[in-house]
Image (cartoon, chains in turn brown, orange):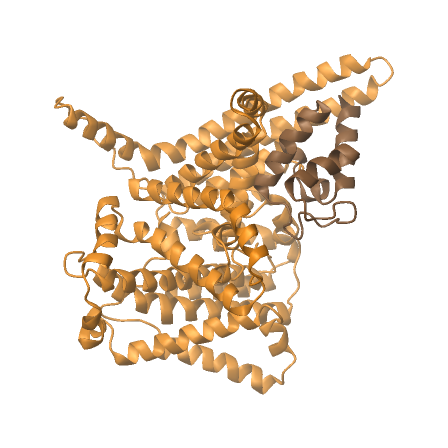
Length: 76
Length: 530
């Protein structure tokens, strides 16, 4: 979880990612951020994030992103 | 059969009566029949294309869906017998076969679109290169006639098959239901581009006569007609006067044309979508919204989230993300990070995907260089804006103006002018003419002409301008107010007399102030040509 928060802070230092759970709904992170985020997450966790997983529910909060990573790692 | 014709009104009226008197289980079948009748008005030959798209997509989606069903069954039966690795390998094999069907379907359908829409453009460019090299050539042009709405229904159909492949929605087993999703007549010509998952419930469900929903639909249709006939078709005369005579109308007239075209396009496209959504509402079908007050956007990125939303979403979900987060792109990014550093490496996927998406957005609008340049310029502005974010942040931290009314107004005006400026490429339909006309804004100082009869020489008289100003203010007012409340909900709470009086006023204003007759041409919606 710490690594996810660190990557997110790198994108938008001004946001409190520990509490925010409307990252997509409130347009805090946009499509460009998502690409950078996926690139960083793939490298950090050595995981492939398939394009069909790019849905708001998976990226609305740091917790949701972490849950996605855990699920994908489990599947691999 | 265009939305602004009496035939269309009669067609909807007859269909409406039939729809609510036949048994409910036949309602969606009637809509399918009506959609094919509607489409055949454009030319019987076109039916072959839409049928080919429907049948190939149906067949491919069945194959993909059945492979998934069989996989689930196989894994369930052999749950204990298979190791984790064997399960993974089996799934990978199935996925590969599903992908083959998806690719075949996409190549076939995008192939039809590409051949019909772009073959002459490609041949013309090859001929130009040959001419430049003084090589003799006599390649003939095909001169294909583009089937009505092909860009829209191809994109909508491909979203369905991709979603089936991605397991986002189940495959439709009834070919006639899939045919209705592809051909549903209100959305067929200029969108919005809908998703199967969003539409299936209201499209195939049984509907009872709901007077509130129907009156909402009627209001939306009237509002669409108001925008199209009172504003767009009236402004069309002035815009055409300016752009069809670039030698006669330069300098300030280019700015006037740019401003008028921005309003015309908005009224034309949003009006057409209002009619499409309203007509669908008459039959209890909910189409996706395509606009969210785009001219109030504070940046070009925001503008593209609020203008032609369904096309933007299509490109984002089915092109931008698949390219930018693909394995090969992430590997390339990794290599570039090592070679050129983090800053450049990180940008590679976004830059390449953006350029591909905006190039395609350009050619989607038309097979011509002006559209390609328009798309790539949009891309450039978006990427430059993205790079300027740290600068903007520094400015906003230094000067606390970000939340003031005047700064927001400046941002909205800047975005509006920037978008209007780029859109001029769509107006003149020729890159060099457009840039030459931009140049005359600075070299030909003829502002005085404008109010010395210049504006009245554009094909509009004083009363036209008064109608336009009033109509634009009404649209602006409704747009601003609709941020906080729904006009239709408000009207629904009013007494019957007030409601009917407002319908009456709207109908009368369309009939009296609508642009008809000599000099006016309401035969085309701008986006129906794409």
